[in-house]
Length: 329
Image 1 (cartoon, rainbow, N blue to C red):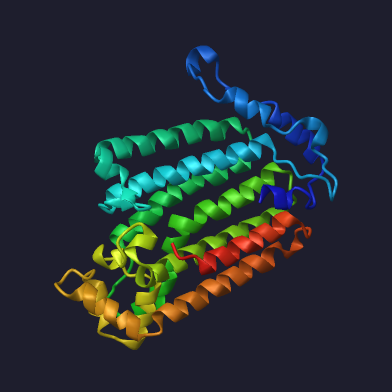
Image 2 (tube, helix red, strand yellow):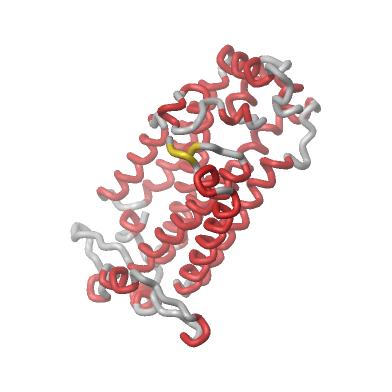
């Protein structure tokens, strides 16, 4: 996203603002005697920062990445990894990407503390970017990750046994999916554009792309829970049902098979519920309709970035959408 928006329209005075941030983002703001902070890769990161004299890259020239944008990517990865550590504890997961999960390997306490430490370091690095909107965007992501998990755990404001729920279930699920998955992607995409001095129109397009790509990614994840193998996924297939979670294919299947409603209400807790629900999803158009919805989100994401200049980077963003739709794990 940084590369795709680097040659897009900029706000007035963007170059001076970027130069100012580039010279500061590796430095603490509080007195060193108080912070007592040492960044072991400070020299390496500084050497990779974008020099001020090539900030005005012309179309056709090699596109460089701002040091602040690279740091943003590191912050986002810290937050993402922390969320995985915490999720595995909450979900009692035993594997992650085909390997023993951290909570199995080191226990719940160390997993939670490791995730907390990553969030703490991410917050420090975020503050040092010294860009108020970016700080606000990414700070909100952290709270929304927690809010999404609470949505999944409590399902508040929802009556699974009511007829009204059938029409609202997917909307509620997509809201939860935005909080747990698409929020981080969408807000970090916008933050990257903002750090590069993009106009509001460009920054908003970056956000729209990230939001719809993130929603599509999770929907395909839901599909793979039914169609992928445990070896491909690196976790047990149909793990969501075993955890009592209804996802998009299940909600679509419920429209065809009303008997799924009570099973969703009791979170597939009775013996045979998960197996029966799986069978009904396979008999329905649930998987097909979920793929269609993911495709529509990718179409929206693709349309949103057509305002970007036609570059290799924009083509890369479009290729990411193809990868989201065709991935096997």
